[in-house]
Image (tube, rainbow, N blue to C red; front, side, top):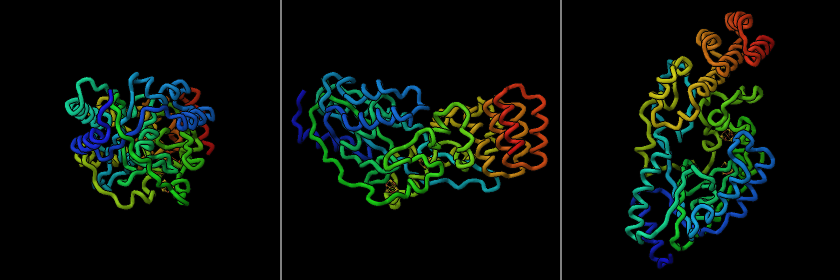
Length: 378
Ligand code: SF4
Ligand code: SF4
């Protein structure tokens, strides 16, 4: 279906703005050959090996919009800024850190609501025959590659899309059979800046725009369901869900304004931003679900979160945490017990060593036993 491209594109831009999207851009539905080759190379190099579902076949499929919508002609790229103000937290407790995008409601829910309303109005504006298929980080398409080609922003060396409104941005795209005018691609780039590369604690950014996902704290604390590699644990600080370090230092984020969906992303409850680690270590599965209802944090699952908490406590090294860690070493799942052992080995007070030695006599799981032995010998 061919629409009167110029005016239709402008009207759609206005419509998207009126629906509260902070960024809007348009690109053709031509295949994304460059980004396909780039991502396939990263898969071949094993930089995404922790994500078993991230296969070359998936990349191939997602690189051609016509594989997803047969009569695709254009893609509308949409962005929402999730930048928000951090609530004050209780300084009497030992706290962890959660990445900013996860402070409020899950952005998939926020986008879903907005995109469905937008598409209903888009059909009214164009035709009921307008076909659409949309993703927000939920399918095989690279939302960042789409955003870059649609002029929403440019690729930073930290692999994020940097926009004129900062990099605290979540993205979505609508593939459509409308024939729309393409937005100009941004000519901006990072120049000689290397701040994100220099500051990354795990050296996960191995080159300009190249991320070793297996070393990134975001992957380690969220998608990774197994043990965290021992050599990376001491570099993770008190991040327990995601990591914002390479965005915090980025100069494009120095002047930051609140986005249109601020109310959805903002958070008044400091326990969803800088949680008390001890209460999180003791939390039941049911309470975890209730406490993080509608939050992306649920993705870590309760055992993954407790594992992350143990690593944070091992880095904080506060002797007052020996007791709850010793309890976790007895009561929790093998994944949590192993990381509790590591944390106790880092704290290494007499009572921490005593807990490890007592548990060593009873522990049946070979991996946990090895963690206990390493902790005792560290
Ligand atoms: Fe490094 Fe954190 Fe950025 Fe990952 S999110 S690349 S660990 S600074
Ligand atoms: Fe680019 Fe510097 Fe931002 Fe890294 S910190 S993404 S190099 S501008």
